[in-house]
Length: 516
Image (cartoon, rainbow, N blue to C red; front, side, top):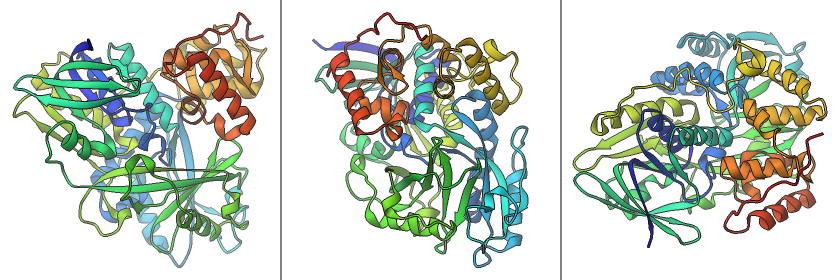
């Protein structure tokens, strides 16, 4: 007999939108079940350019409302999780053959003033012949424009939302697909199937379709409601190369095709370059970068960097499929990044999420919960603005918060003082990954070192607390340690996970060894 669950809201999709809606709804006192067919953030939500940004280029498409909404969210998000998000300054070298100076200045003026800023500094002009950001560029670039946005560890952002949802009573089921959902007058009857074949029956008062690029397919094939909005699936690919520059600024490069790409400091030792925008017509979960995309990113970056970027330099790449609302734009880059929420209350409520971007996920989740509040009679209103994500409240170590960036620096110092036995790079990595939750991890017996700087205690913490079930979950989503390890070390982590968790994710404890 299959297990049965009763809830107020069944959410299908464990990307950033699904996890954000689960968190918001659970915080309003609703009983929530979140079902994700793979790992959390295993597709689009871990394949972004990893920016918290307003979208400077969207101003050219007159997306003022979207840009204003995103700009307003930047500092809300930065304050909520200073360990996984931080301010970043972007340099746009001026290419006289591209946008004229007046247009760039006008755009940056709007970018500075469309929403209130307290933490992020405004834009300025710099002389690239003397500014550190000019050093790695070709000598042709003499003037640059500098503005502010933010950086985010996208996959960890999803996990933190799921963690907060769970802490507020939600049931989070990973590797569990919703294979059937039948609508009745006052409830949904759904069947969830785990990857080991076990099934659960869920009775839900409302269903949220947050399946991202699978949203239309889910409605047609599993929810028996084949009337979706028109979506365009656009593949975005990124490459990672050895570090191209020493300073901490990022670059935004204008291309002859009127697109832009970013070159961003990444994981200390690398530079992240992306993204492409290519119509995707294949299997959604099988998106991979192709040779043309690699060549395009290398060519466009090489127009600016003095040292050419070559395909042979690429040490890692990733691709994701974005589901964008089809506004009949011919250019995939011009398709709106805004979102739409579609609530159908003809019978038991059905809420579908179309489109969206990471920067506006919290606002999207809030609006989604607002829509569900009336039919479900939620007792609490909007609450997430001003609330910390797990690990984001650093006050126990540093006192009252001041600025997200300086707060994190003070926290790293406090954690290092509390654990002088740990190497500085390890302290900083743990602080970045877990924030104040690092103290909880460091109370566990350390166990053996499975790979450099990765101990059994952390692996088991990721299993027990963050739904990690295999090496890929650990190496490429909960962290980016896979980028720093060689094949031997990645294999060691994989072997440990298989030995201790097996196919069913059975738990195992670290041996009784301290972190000393």
